[in-house]
View (cartoon, rainbow, N blue to C red):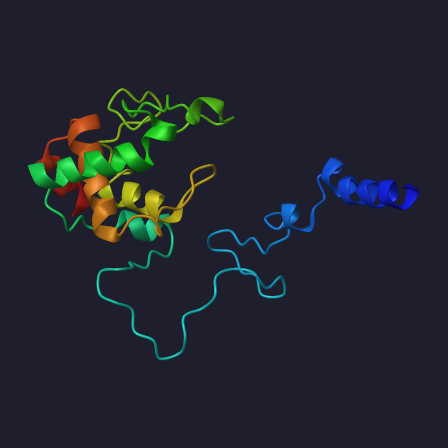
Amino acid sequence: MKKLSLAVSLMLAPCLAQAWPWSRDMANQISVKPQESPDPANPGMTPFPKRSVPVAGTTVLVEDIDAAKKMVNPVKADARSVQTGKHLFQIYCTPCHGFSGTGDGLVGQKLIMQPFNLTSSNTMHSWQSPDYPDGYIFGYMTLGGAVMPSYANDLSPTERWHVVNYVRQVLQKVPADVTAAQSK
């Protein structure tokens, strides 16, 4: 009887300790974050294979924000582009910037640095300034910033330009001809 009690006790011990071999499977796995190398000796993204050719329209190389400022918006700010940009903004941008674009999103409220106010009510600077052309907004989405992550892997270049058109036309209420003039 003692042996049976001991056997039952030994079988139940892992249950009480929540230590069944299969209960830790998810905790003991390789977890790699986006754009992170699984090899600590080679941090960063895995380079593309030699002689590989990128598929057209999938990537736009932006060296830095100064290079991005010089980019001209290739997507016309028509109703369809603005509507697509609105849809994408609501998916990717509202958690921090809020639906209004003023930086009052649910996630943005919890950050130490408040997200940029993307509207024309921004008191830090005027979005119509030549210092902030369409390429600046595109570059910030592409490269990320102090708190903002890069969305280059989540949004195609065309989708990012749609978001720029939405921000310019709806949130900042900048006429299309003004933004076109700024980009030149």
